[in-house]
Length: 135
Image (cartoon, rainbow, N blue to C red; front, side, top):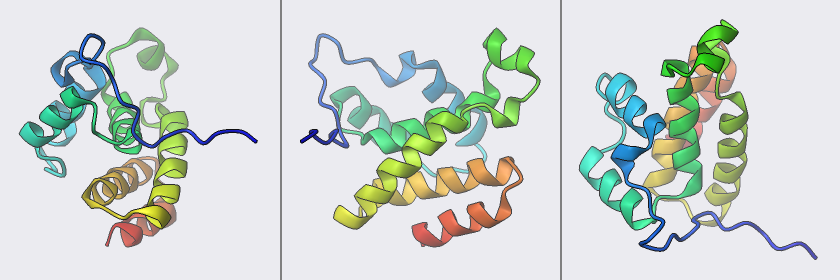
C-alpha cells in the first residue's frame, strides 16, 4: 500500500528557506496580497520559516504568483494568466483532502486564493465554487 504524502512537510533548520527568498512568495505579497490582503505577512513569514505552513497554501500562493513572474519561460509563453495551472490543481487536491480532515484558517486562505486564480483564468463557476467552500 502506498503511503500518503503529508500535508505539511517538515524542514530542518539547515535547509529551511526563508519566505523573502522564495520569488513566488515575494511576488504574491508584492502584487496580489497588497491589493487583496488575504494572508498576514508577519504570521506567514514566521510559519514559513518554521516549515509549518501547509503545502496546499504554499502551492496556491505559487500558482497565483506565476502570472506575475518575470521568468522568461512564463513571459515568452504569452499566457501569463494560464501559468500556474499545474500548481493550482495540486493545491486544490490537497485542500480538498484537508477540508474533509481538519478545516482551519489556512484552508480558508487557500480556497480564497484558488478562487482568485480561477477568476483570473475566466472560470467564474469554479471561482464561485472555491469561494463557497471558503465561506
